Image (cartoon, rainbow, N blue to C red; front, side, top):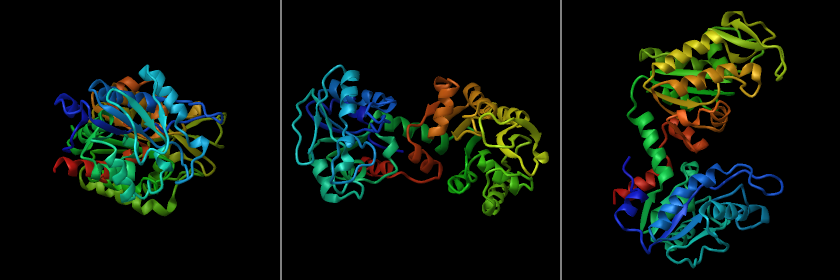
Length: 397
């Protein structure tokens, strides 16, 4: 995908003295007292800000935080805690500016944080007047918030339409490169792991991947529905019986291409959904009427691990069992370790997937960890994200 990159503008000496507006993703979790509990997104935004400052730009940064009501500002909506953390990370004061849409004073070499952009009326509906006002604040718009790339809002899409120059920041550019490597031009075999509680939430993703991947590993409640489609009994396990036909169609679509959806050979079951429930390994053909399937079994895990070790590219979204419960975490751990040791290029995304990656300490062994939940899923679904579309259009002139 051809987009203009901020790093290229910096290298070409086109940033010094310019007003640079960075749309970052600083939407971090906070406790009831307003303290930031996890700052990965803030730390991830720093390279782009430093790049702009070191190039001599006048830098404005904004983000959404939480779900504020447009037109109504409440103290809990404020980016003040983010400004404080950003100041620490940059080693300089980062002033927080409210009511900024009609004008911002910032000099070259300085950086300001613009208050929560979702408080502005018209933000979510991509109001043209608001987008034009934002665009007038800058000479260069930098989109560096992949987590918002699937939304066409004033601060993510409209401003990119009307700013003199619109480009991708280093985080967004890295996502574009990783997605292209994994999906647009993958090294084969391409194996996708799609897991979660419901087929319905990921049906379009499964259907889209079935046209492209060489192996489609399903897990969690999704696997239970596929087991039903394969004629197996699943007891009281979570599944969507009304989507068995769709699951069967995905299996057939893969089979027609000489590809497969591996159905579990064995499973780990319990009589109750509890962390201390007794875990029992059973053949997939021996699930009792009162059993709950909470993980894949060791034979299945070994089979899938071998498949991942032979892959050229791996796309991973979702744990394959209830990995939060120790007794039912071994399948997800086996998958995680296989992804980590496979020579394949791997890309992983989604909140539960990131939690599993952190739990097993394999962050440095995954080829690329995507920062966007909804955006990552829409890419897997085969959709063109609004942010990618507008930046490509602007790059084409």
